Image 1: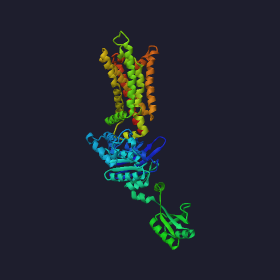
Image 2 (image 1 turned 180 degrees about the vertical axis):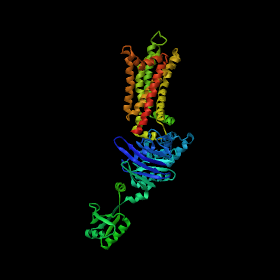
Image 3 (image 1 turned 180 degrees about the horizontal axis):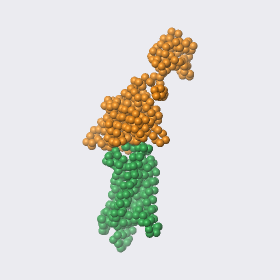
Length: 319
Length: 248
């Protein structure tokens, strides 16, 4: 559905995207993941035809976006970041305008608008001025706009940015529903968003492709190679017991974190290839055998930054 | 020209649901009405009128009110067209739809031009009133309206270009006023320079000279070419500017 080859975008002072290549197949829901400023929005804007690329070739639905921009754009429902709308229009009017702009035939326009409003759950606001809508509704009107012409491909730039937790849940479930009959590329800087909505992720950082793969792989990356164990105060004994456990590389004590009530937080770094579950089980038995009370034991969850750091390091190893 | 009708409709709606067009029409008709009333009372005291020196000629051809109102109305009509879309970010949704720059530019332009024509429409009543008290040459009236339309259309085209040059509506307004006023000042050069090419150029550009001719029923092809240039060139540059945003 989308093919990007060697895409580079040079703003003159900054290179926002550098030699980026990826594909999105028909029917896939793909998360475009990266920290702020990684070049996500720039890439999506180029795909949507808002910005030109410095180098590279992009085809959308089989149409080269430079050679046949109108056809390419007709196959995309694009929702820009923060979905800017005209405040002086009513929701129905706005969507009608967008449908006309996207060449929905006059006879089908009212139906398309009605369907898009139902899909995005904004029907009850059909006759409200956009000016008076809350952020959540505006976001959904933006989504309805992307859907109104019934395009096969949706490109959503940070669809949940600025929403409250309930709205985020709603939008995510909506995206999952839409994913059944659309190809979707959505960008986010939140790892869990990709986990909850996408089949596959493309990770970029500083304009370069860092990793690409199924969510399971990403999920595996998500657990760092650190296990966190909280024990009752018994410093020397605990350390000695843990050092004997197979797969343990190093033991650190987390200072100043949860260390009240005579508890200690130990961070155990695993050897390469060691499995979290096995080490935790072995460590807990070893500690129990040594008479140390265990309060908690769990893989330390990696932050997005950690995952990026790991992915970037992995890239360097391979390169 | 893909996208023309949708954009035209939206711009018309957006102009007339906001107070802007109504306020401008009100101010415009107030000024024009005052100008016309003043002309009529002036001519009402004259006993002898020559054929090409009547109230119609004075109203369209010799009134500074015309340029003053256009100086206010045209930049105000065009200032928000692109500046507002770029400031609020809606331009991104607009340009990622299957539209061409030409469709966007001409659609927006046509909407302001229609609005401009609608603002002038009530002034036809002035002529109807005049006819009730005397003779009116409708061809002269038609020529005058050609002049009014051409002048306004060229200012609106410049205004659209200026709106595409900046994200600030105020700046777009001021830049357009500056160009319109600049053209007027160049026109004044006709009365300053010695006869020669400079004076010719000034006379050619002068809105006062143009309107004086049209108000006498003279439709000169050179004037029409001037209007066409002043409309098409800024529109063309605007569509190139819109295209250039992709490389920003």
